[in-house]
Length: 90
Image (cartoon, rainbow, N blue to C red):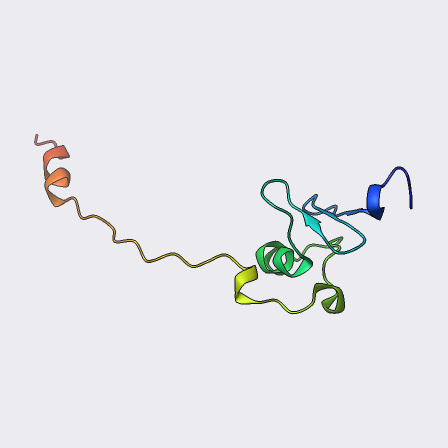
């Protein structure tokens, strides 16, 4: 084990997450995750040279739980009365 690199961590030059030898991903905030979660949330979309999480055999199976949950559609309020009151008449 390299004493300058605890648990032989790899640091991704693209997103700066650290990945331990056993595959634990340490995000900048929140609890640690897996390579599959990192791929589902970041690597799949960024796709920049230097990303260290592109090998499917290391990523494993990506499940729906690895990605972000889809929220409910929000209704956009209609402010017709506000629109009318903010118009200036000349």
